[in-house]
Length: 304
Image 1 (cartoon, helix red, strand yellow):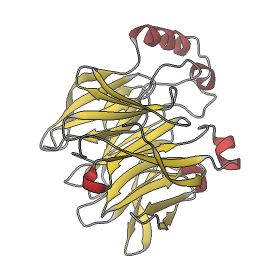
Image 2 (cartoon, rainbow, N blue to C red):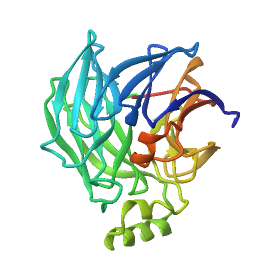
Image 3 (cartoon, helix red, strand yellow):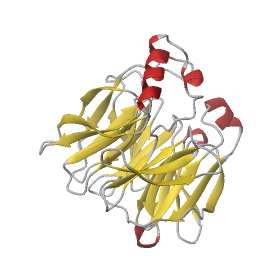
Image 4 (cartoon, rainbow, N blue to C red):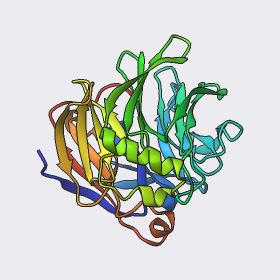
């Protein structure tokens, strides 16, 4: 199953892959653009986001929503025009990152919990944004909430806490509120969690704490067998977890894997976004971002 096929390269740093209308959509954060790629390999520029694009999703009317990281806004692309869908800057001082949008148009947006790669990581929040653009904090106390999925029935949200080392689950009620926080699966081994807790306590910079080769959850996606594929940049692989933490599959990647998405033929092709490094200065100066795909056993499910 690890017969990886390269489908595209020459990007700065890729995030937020989505499968929509038979195309792969994704953000080049440090290239400041959103693209889509069709089955024939035709690449199209969708939008330019000067404050760095990340998570992507669609409202019920088909409008594309794009996380604008540095100014902590959601941008809306409708009929070729960009506008501000929501401003989240009053809810978090940290740059926003990935996002999932529920079937009713509610967006759930994570953020770094750190000012930059040199900073101490703080516990931070998940922000919900209604289809009308109303914002509020819907969960708190998270360590770098990153890739996020919603179950097919719309009743469960699972977020990868990159530096918490967990896939963390919440129940979603009818009004979109989150409750009943539990650990869906532990990604980071417990002894490394102790080490990272000490690192945080001692205020050691993030770039130094990210050098130990244990898996951490970055981008994630959900399949029809209730398995979650996790991109783990620290170990340069994607790992499939079942609830409770059982690992069923591991696929090594040529360079660190930062995000993944199911799509393509029968939605059983796993697209994997990789880069040599996530260091912002390196990414601005180099184009090591690549996209691979591999066929897997179960098709895409839920959101995104």
